Every structure is written in C-alpha cells, then in structure tokens.
Length: 275
Image (cartoon, rainbow, N blue to C red; front, side, top):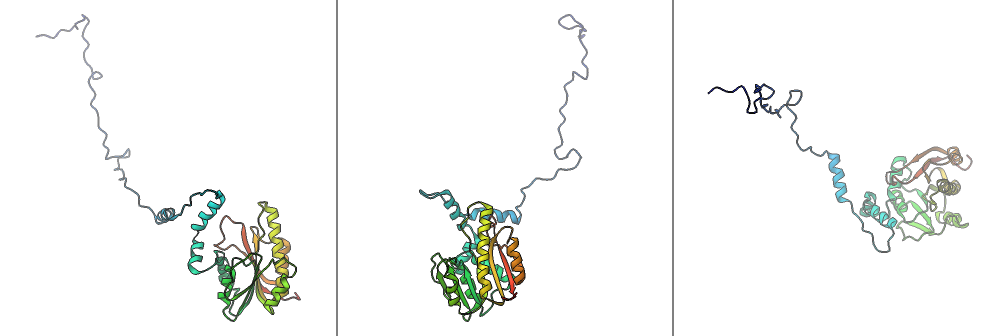
C-alpha cells in the first residue's frame, strides 16, 4: 500500500527530521570527573589526636545544675572549680588551693626557696603558699604567714590571724621571725571593683606596703615576690625594685586563670638596706 503524502487533515505530511527523532539519553559516567580523572573516594575522616582530646575533654566536663537560691555566678564558679585541673591536682597532692602551683612554678623558674630559708608569706590564706614554702625549706627552715581571714593551721608554719595593714602587724611578724628573712612573698589583693584603674592602684599600694616590710627584714641577697595586675608593676615601684635588687622580672604562672589579670613581679638579690 502506498503511503499518502498528505496527512489526515489534508495538509502535506511533513517528513520527520533528526530534530523530531527521540533523543537518546546519554548516561554520565560517574566514575569520571570533569577532568577525566577518577574522583577520590569519600570516606570518613579519622579524628586527629587534638580532636580526640577536645572531644574527651568535653565528655569529662562536669556540668553543674542551678539550684534554688544559688546565683548564676556561684554556679559558674563551682563548675569552673570542678573542671579545673589545678584544683584536682591540688586535692590529690594535699595542697589547700590551686594557688600553690603558682608559687611552685615561680620557684622552679627563679629558685627563690632554698633549704633552711626563712620565709614570710603576706596574705597567706587559705595556706597553699605556706605549704609550698614549708616543703621547700625543710624542717630547719622557718615559715611565717599572716592573713585577716581564718585558716586552719599549716604544719611547720606559724600564722598570724590579723590584717597586715594593722599598725602592729609588722612588729609581730618580726618578733615571730626572730631575725632576717630570706624571702618575702605577697599574694595580697584587695577586693576588685571592676574599675581597672582603681583596682590597679589598690594592688600596687599593697605591693609597695609589702616592699616596705621586705626592705626592713630581708637579708642581703634575699628575694621578694608580689602580686600585681596585667601590665605589671608601675614605674615608681619598678624603679625602686631595680634600684634595690639585682634582677627584676614579671611572670604569669600557668595556674593563674587565663581570664584573670593577675601576674607577679619577682625581685631577686636584695642589695641591702644601704643601697
């Protein structure tokens, strides 16, 4: 049968072209990339050691639930204490506070506390620095502490419960010391106000008062340590320390919290009262 050249509508039938032919779907070779290379196989990446350490740290973090009547600031402080490695280490090694490791690091770096030395600790509570000093100087050494806060006795140390700024405090310390001191330590700090300039002036005033006492009792070659704030001792205090000691340095021990502004000024080798 001959095919009609006309469609059913009476119009000439249009010859099919390649445009009308159904297109064959070309499958993309997924084993090749746009560059003709085989793509890298995607696998789970192994955690690096640091990632694993961070994850373990998060898993070991102790969260403290808020309790009725407890302020948020108190809850945050408690949580920080429970997760502080220095707090755990102090508990394990029998120290009163994490502050003990501040003095231990300073002593390891500068060699301040020696066997049989005579040490005065200003602002001693809760007693961590006294404990470090007692262990360092041994049974033939002498450790005298003072603080207006009550603290349990520290074996091997004599502690006065009174304010160092009281008029009679320095003389009572001298009486207990019974002679010159080899080291005077001051971890004293006034309650912070949140106003940086005010807090700086207060702590520098305490450091200067501690230095007044140190210059009265230190033996030649003795050492002095005082707490200051970030930025270190001010110019007047530094000038005085550099005049009266052979070496002056600043240190921020690892046990000092990173968000804390505290640091310490260390003066080594007292030149004597005539300097």
